Length: 517
Image (tube, rainbow, N blue to C red; front, side, top):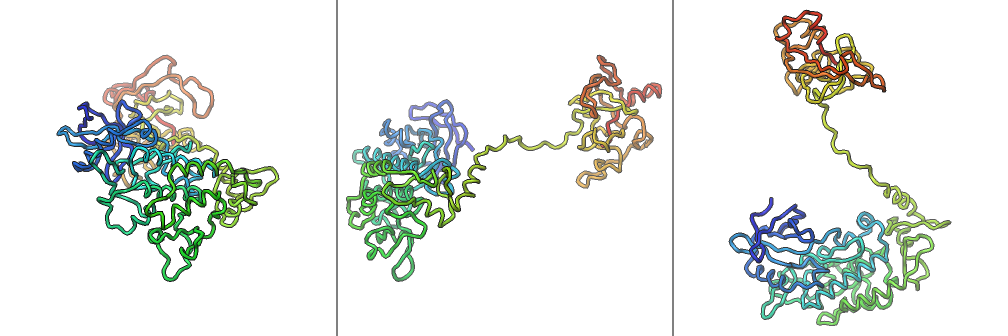
């Protein structure tokens, strides 16, 4: 349901269009007349503090922020003047980043993306972090849901109204967070309210996102625990700085999980950045910044070679064998699009490659739901002698085909009358009302004669005007032919009361029948 009347900050009315999405906090709508903008309307009116934050963010909007984020451009008020939402740039054609780094979802949503694509998307994510930090802002709630990726690997940020904003002497805090992407110093808190965030904390979340993109959805703190007691959760491992791929394994008591990308598949520079980002001593500062990640990922992107077995695999030049082939052959899971090379074998991924090619065949266009058989719809009409009397027009409902079967079916050549409601007069027909348990049978008229019994004459109760056309199509032939009616004439069958004084032969010539189903 659309909200009531809304006004922008200048008092101009804003018309909302189609609802695009809805969450626990609010709903997003198109803005009529502004194809590049959307409006977020809160389900409950925001607090005065949050309304002031939205107004401050709208004043801070810059072209660089609007390019990488769904940044508020203006507030929306109800007729009483209270803030009810805000407008922002429309972000279309993008998917959450977790659909890119997970193999199964990536093959569905990004079917042509290889490791080069993931490296480029990671670098673009780092660039967006750099833009936000350069504006004096802190994301705070870094997670794989508020970063979205396009088919060209561009990255945009959404849910920006949760950012930490400082303007003058006012500070609006980020009071939410996802534990799997929060640094050790933010773990174990009952609330984030009133906590000042820093870019160094954002850098931890950025390192987690980059790791998940490069290492195919693996979390850097999920691995095999070698210590005493129960294995820690991801949040507990973060709090204890148990980086699963760390060089200091005696301290972390963690090892990489089976089937994961060896950390040696990354450049030494990137390995060092991960060690520094997840080290316990960087809690107070010193984690790699966004610009460092952009440079390191650019170095990795220029140090790749294509696999000699599968053209869809790219890996670092310094490696002796393709690590992706080893993982796919051991797990039976296809990680990237399969590209065959002449004379090469792909092992267990061969069937996946075959299915990949089959999946490329486009689906046929949708024809929608088939409508139920129409009663009294258009179709050929036959006389008592079996001659074609013309083609019944769509608007005529007093005469119709029996049931839903075509009149030209071999078993349906005999003449059979049809009631005015479209049902068959023959009680032995499945389309007679008495044969339909969901419809009560209708009694025959009191004066049952040859007409009512279906043995001859016109069907009882037909009092509507029926129009025929002389030119029709014989259902048993592929070529049109002339019916028994005059080609250019229009004949009208009289109601039974009006035909009472007509001669029997003349009445019989006006009798209308349909082909038997």
